[in-house]
Image (cartoon, rainbow, N blue to C red):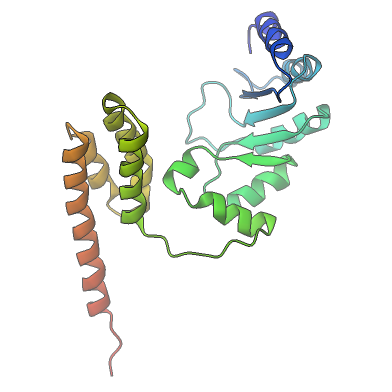
Length: 219
């Protein structure tokens, strides 16, 4: 975003190469500067961008920092093209708050979708009224399905790295998820990781069984 002219040149060239929808994704900039942000967004639309996605944080802000959704409401006022917001959406309530504050046309899911792959259907059902039945979430089934997809869709040298990336976020679904993440990070192959993950899920299942026994109502 600091190289205004170069971005304009790239967008202009890209626009001439296709009649397909052309989109861009940006952050709010290196620092909060309404004038510069407004000029940049206006330039993108003027050069032919059909849709803009904004990750509602500054350039170097970490993912843990609360996104600035209210700033995106200003961008919505400046543009006539659709605006999509990204950042900090981990449940339907987050999505609802984001749309209310930003007045955006839609949501883009990032880390939240990796942590909870069922988040798409949850938001579609809760916020957009889609007729999608609720299903019981099986975390082991989702994880094992991801491994199977890695094996069929990715070359061998890229599988383990992707599995480690996925596990970093997916582990947040467990109270002691750091044990899961660490076991996969220390694995030297997908097969080794799968074996360690299987042991982790077995322990989790045993804990659930024990908890049900301990908390059975008295008769």
